Amino acid sequence: MVYIHVIFLLVEADVFNKFMDHQGKFDESLITNLQGLLSLYEAAHFRVHVEEILEEALKFTTTYLDSSLTHVSNYMFGKVSKALEMPVHKTLIRLGSINFLSIYQQDESHDDILLNFAKLDFNLLQKMYKKELSDITSVRMYVVGCDVALESRDTSTFIDCCKRS
Image (tube, rainbow, N blue to C red; front, top):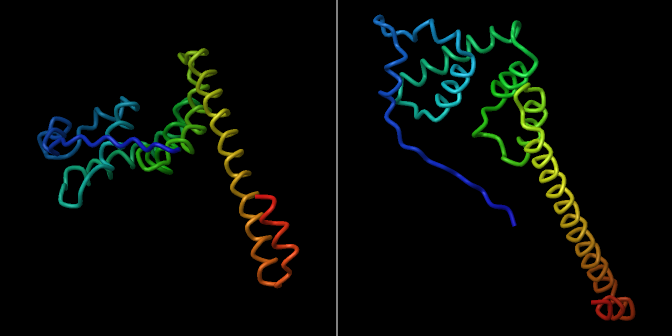
C-alpha cells in the first residue's frame, strides 16, 4: 500500500516582503545564503498565478541559483541542479529519495547511521515493489492463459487452468 503525505500550509505572500529592498526588488544580499535562496526557490513554487511577489521570487532565485552552479561544492551543486530540474514538492517521494540520498551522502555533516537506514529502507521497499510487480505479472499471465484457452474453445486446457486456481 502506498501512502502519499501532503502538507498544505497557508501563508500569505506578504511574508516575502521582508526579503525586498526599498525599491521593491529582492535584496541582493540574499544571494550570499545559497541554502536560504534554495528554500525561497522551493517556496516560490507554491504560488498561485495572482501572487506577483512569488513570481518575482521565482525569477530572482532561478537566475541566481543557475549562476551559482559554477562555483559551489559538489554537494550544493547536486542539490541545486536537482531542485532546478524538478522542485522537491513536485517529485514523487520514493523516486526523489534516491536522488536525495546520493546528494546527502556528499554532505560532510551527514549522519552515517541515518544514511544507512534510509538506504536500507529504500532497498527493502524496492524489493517489496518488485515482488508485488512479479506477483501481478504472474497472475495476469495466468488469466491471459485461461482467456486464450476459453477463446480457442479448448475445454481441456480451460479446465486445467481452472484446476490450478
